[in-house]
Length: 509
Image 1: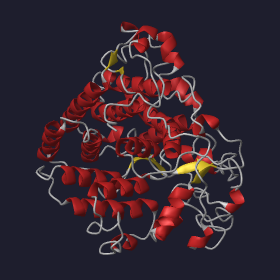
Image 2: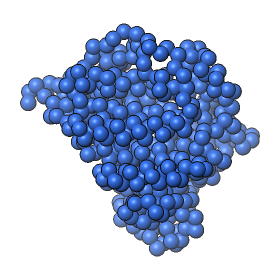
Image 3: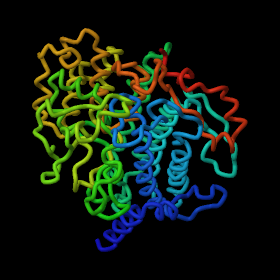
Image 4: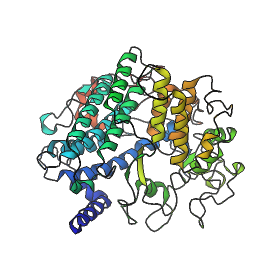
């Protein structure tokens, strides 16, 4: 037990050392030199790095999906809100591929190190990150990627082909997980599920549903999607339900500089409890807050946002002002003046509470999964999913209340309320109701997913940025100039990229 405790302490200490830990365990510092790190330590650090990468892509997605805007206490970011960006901006590419290299190292070395259990989880994480790369950039290096000196200029794979390959990769991950149950000595390195194989398989199945439903509006994909959904049901482990997929948590994050939950560290407080400089930067939009108020959705409103004046300094997790609807005020998307922190709402206790530095970093919510199942059943009534689209939809709303920390009794009140897009029976377009409820449920947790779903469904119909005189909005990112410099021929082969017109394969209108 003492030895196990020392291992846990070492993992926590290394993960908390920020850049120093990344330098020590980052197997991609020199891809031409063989590393010697132990796979279990690399895996733990890779998970930690995933959170620091996702906070960046999620932030951009939270803005471009219309959930967040920028506080007026800062100079307006024209890169974000006027869409004045180039291939030198939003370079999530390098950090994602660097992170993928770490997971690949675990896969390549787990057998030799007698740490076979780690292969399955590493493959699941790889699939999640690769899907996000496709959703950001389209065609990407995949079959030639992560091969170090063997392939220095990897070719790009077709994005739809990558999507199909990810389903196969997740199937392989499930096989590995079933064949290699976790051992006690490795459980501490798994800061997601603590070595719970069933939960990893359910996460893999949930990611498969995300990948499949993303393609549901693409012509000619119905048979493929239905076949794959039925295969998930035949496998039999099910999906993540009742709780969320999170990295870290109370046993991992520590009250010390560099060891805090990265969300808390960026927009919340430092280790001493002092507010971060960016505390007032993300602000819930006027569209979001007014929509919740109009729908009487005040229980979730009070968890998504703080009332004007922000978090109480005396009672963390509550608002300084009375938590009544009149005291919640959103910021118009892209506005540059007139909406200062003192008179607008800030991101609420579902995301930030002073002193709660050790929450898990959520990478997929149970609510999202229920809405995926609802859409699957609504589109494909003959798939072998056991419940109705309505029951999945209502479970999605219930899980949204739960993850936000709202009283879940409020979720059941919408059944029979006759409120369109809340009450299933009163909603004439069921897919619209699912999309809008999913958008609400993703708020504060999964900004990239919210933006991706917005591009796929065009819902909800959010206001254009005040900084933009026309209707153009980004539909993707440029390939970064770093890739253009090191892999120029393959980048050029993708043709001219127009970030307002070169849509991804699942973005059909």
